[in-house]
Amino acid sequence: MRSPWFSKPFAIFGPRLPISWLLLCFVCVLGLIAILGSTSSSAFDSVTPTPVPDIYSNYRRLKEQAAVDYLELRTLSIGAGRQRELGLCGREKENYVPCYNVSANFFTGFKDGEEFDRHCEMSGLRERCLVRPPKDYKIPLRWPAGRDVIWSANLKITKDQFLSSGSMTKRLMLLEENQFAFHSEDGLIFDGVKDYSRQVAEMIGLGSDTEFLQAGVQTVLDIGCGFGSFGAHLVSLKLMSLCIAAYEATGSQVQIALERGLPAMIGNFISRQLPYPSLSFDMVHCAQCGIVWDEKDGMFLIEVDRVLKPGGYFVLTSPASNPHGSSLSTKKRSTLTPIEEFTEKICWSLIAQQDETFIWQKTVDVYCYKSRKHGAPALCNDGHNTPYYQPLVSCISGTTSNRWIPIQNRSCGPHLSLAELEPEDFFEDSQVWRSALRNYWSLLSPIIFSDHPKRPGDEDPTPPFNMVRNVMDMNAQYGGLNAAMLEEKKLVWVMNVVPVRAPNTLPLILDRGFAGVVHDWCDPFPTYPRTYDMLHASGLLSHLSSERCSMMDLFLEMDRILRPEGWVIFSDKSGAIEMARALSMQIHWEARVIDLDNGSDQRLLVCQKPFVKK
Image (cartoon, rainbow, N blue to C red):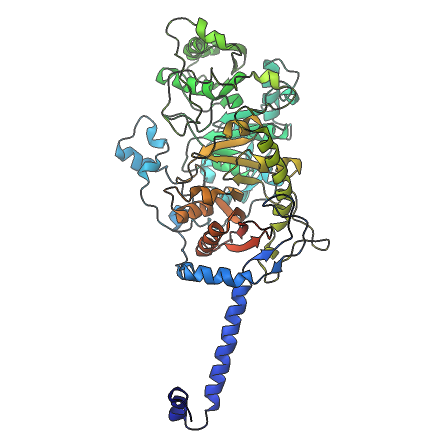
């Protein structure tokens, strides 16, 4: 006897079911199989165990696992699979930099240059959309070719802006059909960068600029770096030169430097301290950087003193123009006398003057500050935290720090400030990242996103050593990834970011000769769109889980600063990785989760941003 449910088809179609109905059922079954099959192809991969915790090694093939079903069902159960994919922003936001709305800042009441400063509190709610590349955008050339040739369509600078410029650094840049070419290294330019660098070296008593490292000069803060030619030359000498310049809507110095693969970020001296700790740089350089150093009662020079290490150098190149016909020496004297007077009050010595270049050296004797004349700036009550865009101060910092070590005492190599951390933690961190980098690098290939992913083996060579250039470690800890990159001779530089509420390891990172900055990831990062080839975030998502941050806003910011076809590697707990995978799908990233298969709760998420041409 048929059940009532089973009798319904017969009541409709008769005792024999029509062929069309059977074919429809068959097609539905095939469709269901196809959907389940595609779902299972984009999930966990298994790797062999490793002796180092949370790091996988010595495997060549990634195997599909049944865990894919769990991940997909978990994603659907929390509703992430039904989230709307985000669209592209309008063309007017191609070069969008949050926190730098000059017109809005001006109408709000900021003046005297503060309208050009960073004001994230004025940004309000951001439109949730993806910043698109310019119409004719091209992937930058790989380093070192990309240092000397960049695509003009990738920058917001017009031909007229370029041709109207007369500064030394811009004369070193030649405009061609669809690219800018830099020829500062050909040795044919009379006032070229090589001659200038050698002049600076000789003024501080060196035989040539190849002796900078031996003299303790390893890190240079280049203020208003032009188009990065001086920094590019210092990088060729194995120095770390970090360019900072104010936000510019067009013709940005920072954007051009980053496009060339040179370390740079938006920063200025208008009203707030730079996001670096005291005693961070061996040299501060300003060549026609546009800052009036004796304004604001010398607070700009005090900020330079704060970030300058004992025995470090301040190099100032003043303009050479003399339109009124007065003698050059008289003009220089009237301009620099207030600076010379103030530098004596902060224990600097003018050690050399040649042509338009002046070099001061900061004292190595901390007792100099106690023997100064009346009216000199007071000493600060220093804390141990790195300032995060705090107002400029009028007192001298760093005199009580255990990092008060003259740069000349580090000529045998970089000094590491290990006093505030456990040495065994530092060296264990270094070993972990050596192992991690070897595996990270082999994952940077589109084959990782195929239905049957594999590692490049003998028949598939690993990605080239210059595959990426600009790398950001969003939770850098001790800078271990940066150190591993250098040991493996990868042609990269790393922006080591220490979150504001993480342990303050930034002084250690800078003492290792690396680029670094403190940053609050609830705010946008001070850089232009499409400026990094690779972002790395180890433990960042778990760290931010208790913060006020919106994770979607964080991912949109990462997408903004990541170049098309750029890479993102997350390393975190499985719950955070599941959330990150769901968010990456909303912003159209290719993504694959890697299961470490070592008994831990750690996972990797490897993502690649697509090149959207619309």
